[in-house]
Length: 442
Image 1: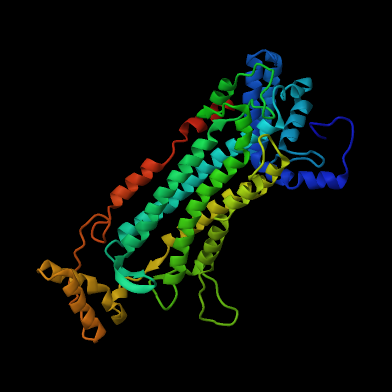
Image 2 (image 1 turned 180 degrees about the vertical axis):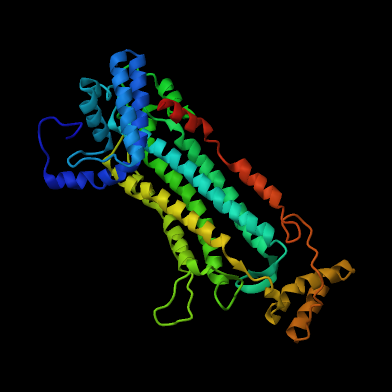
């Protein structure tokens, strides 16, 4: 059963090759497809191409299908090409000829594009919420341990004093900036391609402004050709935003792996977040954070995969774009799972409060001693050389006095409230989208 059926059959291998994983991946688009159908149907009714009687039947049918999706009972039957076909065939079974009218003025090209936009919008909302959960864990830990000192490193060499508050809030602020990428991606996603047809519009007098409003989109993708050119661009942009989050979390995971090893001993992961060795009974491996690191590294490659599929294509739609779905759709679950695991692991992580008691960290304070001398009038280069010579000849000792770092962003002034304000400022507001979807399916 195909929407484009014209009385001839295709070779079975050709069908398998062209359909690919669509039946599997389109299940993720089912809710979006029903929403798009509902908005399009209401618009067709408003311009007189679907009767009020048919509208009532189709509205109830679409609500029934939407409920099936919500209950996990929706399936794409064997022999049905994709989610668009499945929904239309189900409507035709429920509503008769009325179901055959719902595709008027539309192509599967703009149908899949609006599905991807609506799916992406919901997925980005869930992703922002997951990023916020990790942010809150990092900030809570940063506040709890803001005065607990730890070594800072440059070039993997002991450098200057840091603190757990500084380390953890550094990644929190990184996530706040990553939200800007998600916000930009959400803005691109939140535009309506419905009505662009196969890329050249329609002779049917569609009301695209109405479907934009019904679906809660912020704006239209006005030009019909460009609306279709957003396929590939949308996926690449969203994946670039996901890659930014992944880069932050992957780097954090690397720190956790490093700091939890016995040679550092800065943190300890709960037993539930470690695995053992088949030969060494003492081992507690940070496999969770190693997998987080690996998954995050892999996700950073995905924008380029989509780029290579879509680069140098002329304007118009091409089947090449089908392959982007295999890269794109599963990534949302992977990044949300990664964020969830990272949040849980960090929340339960033990922190060593007495790291700097170890003699090997005494050189952390050489800059403090240089600055003390400068404050007493000694030129910086003279003070630097004097402290450096004491280190060189083995006579350097630090007096253990309390540190006094006061500038913004230092260990004595972490500006945690400012970081929280930045995160709140960078979030995108999705309330209008959720309200529109709710009203559409009431």
